[in-house]
Amino acid sequence: MLNASAVLAGCMVGAGVALLVRELSPSQPALDAALQRTPPGGSLAAAEPEPTGRDEVWGRWLLDRLGHVPGVRVPTTDLALLGQAPGRFLLTKVALAALGLLAPAVAMVPWLVLGTMPFYLPPVMGLAAAAVLWCVPDWSVRDQAKRARQEFAHAIAAYLDLVALKRAGDAGPTEALERAAQVGTGWAFTRLQQAFLRARLDKIPPWQALEDLTGELDLPALADVADIMRLSAHDGAAVYTTLRARARSLRAELLATQAGEANADSEKMTAPGALLAVLVMLLIAFPAVIRILTT
Image (cartoon, rainbow, N blue to C red; front, side, top):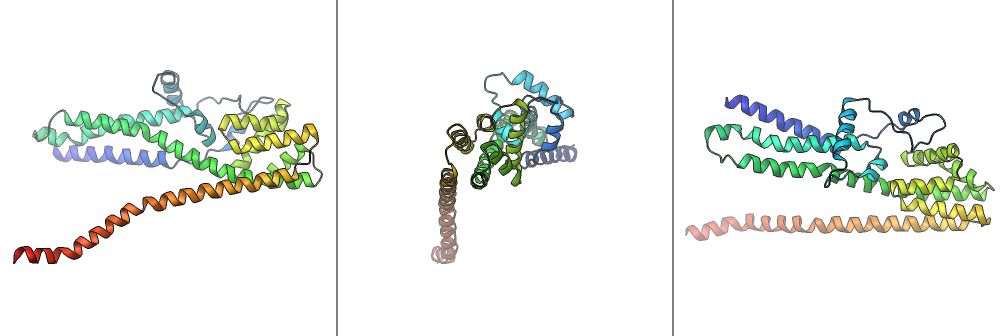
């Protein structure tokens, strides 16, 4: 009985660890599949693919029933930036919470059978574990979205220089924006290319598509590009100097942010270093103290 319970508890804990690792290290979505699901003549934002996998079906079912419940928050903006489905995100939250609720009870079955543990301890620990695991996907998505926005800001700094060079070569505002986006590689430039494709399909100016993308994904650095190019198109202003200046200021902001994060990480290492020094001092003084106490 004890061996079977121990094996079952180990399997539950292993499954929980595997699911947690999978959530904390998600893979990038395939953008070509999203383009293939887009209806002809329609907008990329309006395309809503039908769920195909079992996870997507269950995720959509949970989203329809729990999406409007108070206290259940789905970060749709961050998920859209990361290319993750809200239904799959909610399914992961529910699965992790259920695992945290059941794992302590299963793991403590041998001690409950032997009567060496209070009966109320597994439910209390299960509720605590479920509450923590319920929040883990939110923390993971928030951290990933923060890193993605920083990466996008770096890409926008390079994109500003590319647009400035295209404008210096007598390219029009629309041509400069589209050709500069085609030069770059990476998911950030792919998002820009999709935005310009949507602008062509919807017959709207490209800077309007950039503004829509800014509001959809919460990308403040992209709004400056739209404002500058709108000014160039409407007033015929020479924006080469403005674009280069904005690129330099954006790089300075990113460097300042990275310096602040590095300083914060260095300060976090102060306490462990001081604790390690105290432990070393105690280890050095321990033999002398023992000798004094024993004589």
